[in-house]
Image (cartoon, rainbow, N blue to C red; front, side):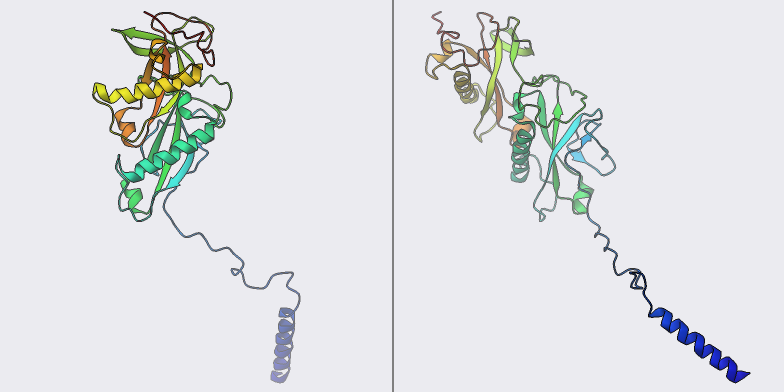
Length: 297
């Protein structure tokens, strides 16, 4: 009996060994060697090409990050995410070379995203950075955020919009700045209100002048280069000589960025022509000297 049991066990063992050598149906018997290794843990990085329902915040935490498809109602659109140098120990403060470099990158990216200088529309660009704890965890990104606003004036409010801003200024668009009606007092323009160019108006957006890297204008003399720069933009827009007579053809309104935005590198000055003695209908783009004659009094 014992000899028979031993023989049976030997036969079963041989059968099992032979079965192990049979075709495995494409399986090699190792359950884990074909799995991709999980990615190494890293700091939170926001995505580009998404939107945010909440208002813009210059410091973004993971807890507050809630991206949505830009087809949904939103207030902020992220057009690009860049990176600061990894060696920096803390988020760059306002006015630092790193933050100014980030704004310059965002400025270029936003212009490419909408198809023209974003300042030529009712848009606001801002740069968001990680929180202190996020930075300590290794986050080094900066986020380029665009927001639609109700006007280009200082008292503008944020517009809740649907749809991406991609190519929004590449052609005719309700976002584009155009003809304006000035509200003036004491010989200076206080507010510019957008109007249809077919209605009578006394002002018009003519373009953007890039100011050189100098301190924010605070004295009367500091504003002279801004007015001179915008007059040159005005001359090219209307098609009149940029000479000493230009100041007698039209007034000019300059709208530089605020002092805080100036510190982070925004040097784009919005320029408007202003007819303080008459109104017109239609745009003055390319209208030439006949439409903007030299005033003798």
